[in-house]
Image (cartoon, rainbow, N blue to C red):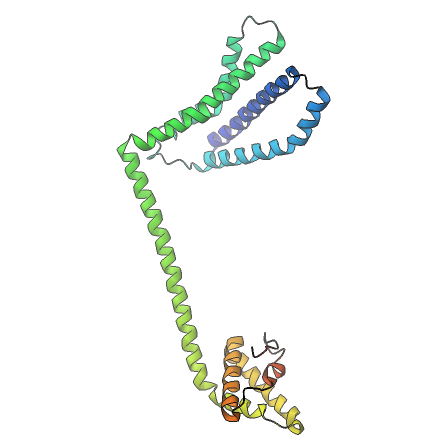
Length: 271
């Protein structure tokens, strides 16, 4: 744990050093192009937040890789070693040291700092972009055990995904089957209630209050039996029975009005 935390801190420092060198090169190039300081400061002020976000995302990805050891040793026998990781992280500092050695004898401070910055930039680009990618490709191509292990790992991951998908499909099929079975059971149990509701739809205005009271009681019973789905099934059965008896397509859906507020039932249109 201490080793990993030390790697994270060193990588933070090396990345900060790399960005400082990049900023120095950029500012020097702008000054040599004749850009005034106030323009440079205004540009840096607007881009500071974006640079901070990019660095944060980059460090998060690297820290996660270092902390969780995402590289698989069987597939990456070189780049997963501590020696390579230390070399990778220290490459900005190594580049700065090489730039310092290369500028020995230079008395101009600006050129001396520029040499250090260019050494840092060149070494970091070489290691982080060219060497690291090349080493990763070689690890995947050359060792047969690496390719075999990767193929087995991908096959296992694919099998697990397929198994999870099949389990979800099986669970969904079981739920649908249970719902269909429940609806078939409801159809038989609700038949008498549907007959009564169909009769209530034809109630005269004089008995409307009594019909509403009875319909509400039937609705509460249906809600207790199977919730909203059971109530919907009962309503559909009652409407179908009423239409069959009255030979009419035009009816007033009093059931939806009577049941409004029972459980999660809301006043539904016949559609």
